Amino acid sequence: MPGFIPGCFFSFTSESFNSFSKKRKLKLLIVEDEQGLRETIEKYFTEEGSICETCGNLETALQKIAIYEYDCIVLDIGLPDGDGFTILEYLKSNNKQDCVLIISARNSLDDKIRGLNIGADDYITKPFHLAELKARLLAIFRRKAFGSTNVLNYKEISIDLLGRNVNVNEKAIVLT
Ligand code: CA
Image (cartoon, rainbow, N blue to C red; front, side):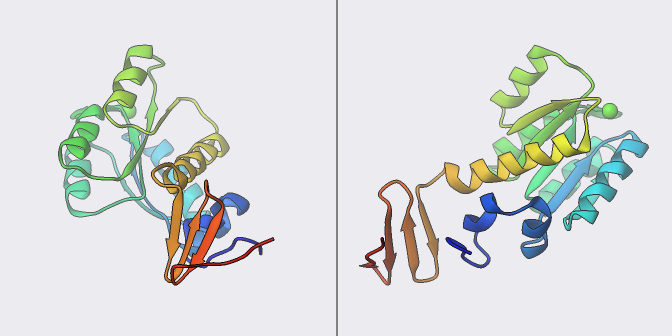
């Protein structure tokens, strides 16, 4: 496959969530107090090849994110013991890099702006289709993979996406 580097995000755009997720198992934390929805999301992404952890309240979520790192936290805003913004604030003040996708019953502009301003990567309003949630997660990972740098490095290979150069062991390779 052209442009494919094993174990690297570079292959991501041309692959399905499923095959990518199996190659490099995505670790998701699903924070949602509605048991039915939580289990549905968990089942869906487990079948897609991700590792899913779940919890239904703020306190457990904070304990988990303090100990573990997740590729993405799927975060409900309305939780029985507080709101999901607390998690975003915790991640921000502790410099944690976990992506966050907010799910909320409240289709409120203020909530969206607040969530995005304190570090959420995206926002989806209930009810939503699982396929849309998956597409939004994919978009987050794509942005994350390409957003922070134009240079991809894998072992001795370095690819400058903007400069359109490829170096191996710091020697330029002539490409057609
Ligand atoms: Ca809720």
